[in-house]
Amino acid sequence: MIQTREQFLPFSLPLIGEEEIAEVVDSLRSGWITTGPKVRRFEEDFARYIGARHAIAVNSCTAGLHIALAALGVAPGDEVIVPTLTFCSTANVVVHLGARPVLVDAGEDLNVAPEAIAAAITPRTKAIVPVHYGGQPCDLEVIYALAAQHGLPVVEDAAHAVGAGYHGLKIGCDALTAGQAVTRITAFSFYPTKNMTTGEGGMVTTSDDALAERMRLLTLHGMSRDAWKRYTSAGSWYYEVVAAGFKYNMTDIQAALGIHQLRRLDGFVAVRQRYARLYDEALAALPQVETPIVHGDRSHIYHLYPIRLVPERLAIDRARFIEELRALNIGSSVHFIPVHLHPFYRDTFGYKRGDLPVAERIYERIISLPLFPKMVEQDVRDVIAAVADVAHTYRRSDEQAGLCAPTRSEVLA
Ligand SMILES: Cc1ncc(COP(=O)(O)O)c(C=O)c1O
Image 1: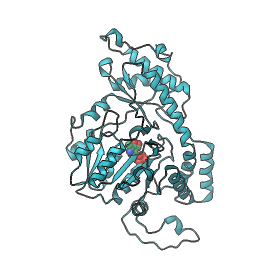
Image 2: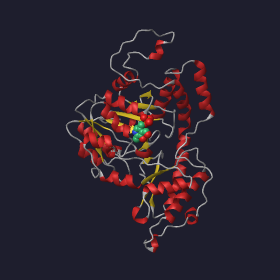
Image 3: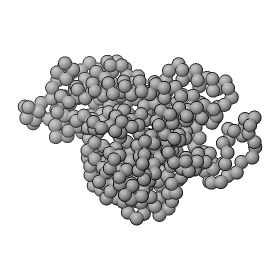
């Protein structure tokens, strides 16, 4: 039996450096603790990094998705196409606007199936919201072509995908749809589990001047001038409310973190990619699990490393597998419970089990393993050893000889 790690390895931990800490302290001492000059600096740095004309900082990706759809005019009676294999916020924001989230199925690569999007388009469709699951971009060529064909805007949920690439271009950059008739907004998350963090926080990017102006307005109550400018020597007390906006602005304390996390992002991603390769190489030897499907034309930044269990080759289910990993001091998680299976979506929109079978089947088998740059290589080896051990211990006894799980030492060899 495997030797259990002494310390529990959580599913995720942020990596905060001294520069971030010093910058936060500087904000606290400066008096600018809400939206101020550091938010502007972070927006400029982010826009440059991504290659986007506009970047607007917000206090979460959820807020970003909300103002994106609001700026596009999503309203009661509209439909918005959303993958079911996502976090609930992607669909919740559609509901907040009084519209109907039309949930669609996943492909085997865990991203939304473009053919499911095509089949869901109706005259009431107002926008398409693909999610770059786990940090691997969706098949954007097909999705943009569909959007252009039907005159629909695309709001990309890039909560997992800051720094990810498609055909050599960064997710959220203007060049992705240059010359194409596609209106596009991209929303990123800086939640602590993400590839870079501001505690809570998010950013939206777009090349569209009018949408950017509208979204900026909506982040702060619909007030016609930035609140922070009101308190500078150049400011004035006067403002006008020109829309019923939200309170979604990012603070300088968050931006202080973000400015330095952004500088370290490429390094963080490189570590995640290296650890993902270690997982790939070792876990490929286990017949009881499947490693992620990765597309060669995309840069996957491995926000998540989801393995899929092969139920026919295991005597335990996913929940028990997670418990066994936990007993070996390895944390893990599940991404995601399909949105259409949640009671609110079932009861409000009439979804039921069986409606979106690919996502349901994925959900029953999936486990996200720990993967974050604060891990050391020994942590990765401990996870591999634990997965191998559980797979071997609970392999199906009626397996054909050829399918027997290798032992932990064989996998680690
Ligand atoms: C796919 C997806 N979209 C949106 C969000 C929301 O991000 P935030 O917590 O920054 O609002 C998350 C959060 O985990 C997510 O996983």
